[in-house]
Length: 189
Ligand code: PRP
Image 1 (cartoon, rainbow, N blue to C red):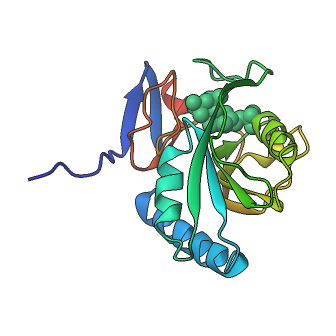
Image 2 (spheres, rainbow, N blue to C red):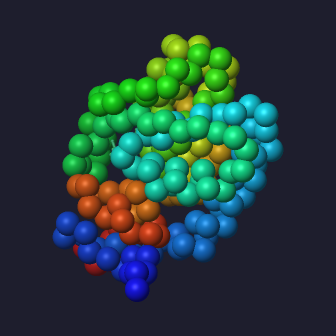
């Protein structure tokens, strides 16, 4: 028998305590709504989803399975946080897409938009390649923390400025395999 999804109520990751914040049902329902919206907005446009590694891999996999129009996928890898909880302030491009996106409808997929640094960079970078359109889809958005100019077309959840983990999001590379989203538990510091 295969193991169940990894979804405890609380978890310790790299010595920090986290508690449940957004559960599987909430994630599934919201992704299903986003998928329906994308089906409508991109019907006959054959969009290309571009996931920003590493964090977006789980959200991207789930959202693509809720989309029923013809579509493609590619990946870009950036890093701004390293193993820290606070952004370094600089974006490093570690892998560029392989696809040719000139004239294509691009949907950039992120797990989270925090300061907006990464997505601000990504949108500009994609536009250099003359796509037909660039849309932004992020599972999470920390509105209070966003300092860079980013237009977010599809957002799963607006969240407060707290450190979150799971469902692709890491703390020093661990915790991405949690199937729900957790928030740091300050009461147990
Ligand atoms: C995280 C996340 C976003 C970015 C958001 O990536 O996946 O790409 O930070 O923060 P920002 O809005 O302040 O730029 P990270 O650099 O931690 O790499 P990862 O995706 O491999 O976790």
